[in-house]
Length: 437
Ligand code: 5CA
Ligand code: ZN
Image (cartoon, rainbow, N blue to C red; front, side, top):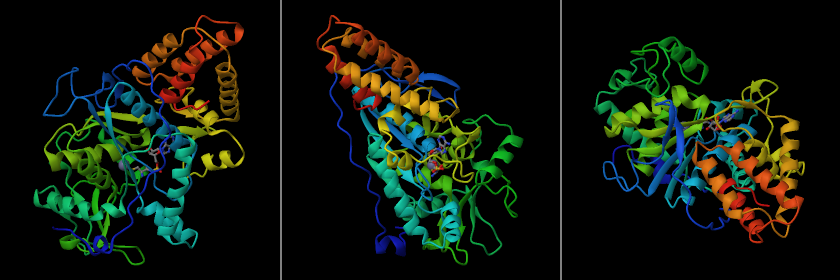
């Protein structure tokens, strides 16, 4: 096979995910989930078509989601947690609606930021990546995130990526820069619909590409926006055997395109991540995948979670304004209170983390825990129906949480008609919201 590398023959470690939380069974079925699609700019039902039908032979009762995961050069912060919780709600809602879910998440375990941090701290980049990935797994487990079926590293995917980059060159969609660097770029003219996912004008695209890891100023490119597919080996940097590409390492967007199509096929129900990935990352990944498979669109829904900020700025490793999930855990904060706090606003909203938000989450958790011990309450089936309906409409967690609060207040105010309700309320918030009381 073209691109079978020395690294693969030596056997790079394959990523392991984490232990799954228990999912209590609920009576009945959830509704069909509708989500906002960035490409179509509105809320649409997820899935291939009307219930009972299929397009291009896709099974309607299977749902596929690819979520852009961490670059492990620092610990999981609340922004990562919020994004992973949003897609966990998607996973839970689909399962509740009776779907089989195929969920893939990547780990960008080789990229510039990882090498820069390792070099700054005089550390081995691989050990750094392994340590932060291990901590991420622990954090995900503590937050009761249902693990992806495939948790896939970039490094272990290099042979597959090499094969696909060679394929893109053969199709005339990839070209080598003739300066001895060994760098290979994607030719955007191969993707005439480029821009349909993010709707930006060229000036905005150029600015965002420069800001978010791109290299519009790189000499020798056919178009400043052309993204790298393969970076030729550099002195002092790790490199892998790229077969006819020569030694080097993969570009970022091709990593996600290849992992997604190899594990999930040529069309996804959901391509997910934070809204910082809408451009250029998801636009470029979609362009790569569409040229490789000939199927458009790559994803039926491009779903973007809002940015969590601190003190008025986006929480980001490069800015250093981070609140780590592990630090909160270390301080004895219940991860369920963190989860509630992050779900108290809508997932698409850019929002700020604060001590007050956490305190409100802790109070809510205490209220729910007190109420679940009540001997009875208002109808548990009614509460389940409201929570299901709220989540089915683009994950309306503020409405779902308010319904749980109202049930709790009523249950604590005096005896209610339903003695089964406290147990059903407990399973509802566990199965659908991921909150264990
Ligand atoms: N490895 C790439 C994706 S292929 C990456 O963006 N890694 S990351 O570590 O920077 O981010 C991991 C995930 O968390 C991505 O989906 C990203 O969009 C999301 N994310 C990053 N920062 C925030 C934030 N402040 N708020 C919400 N989500 C965030
Ligand atoms: Zn990605």
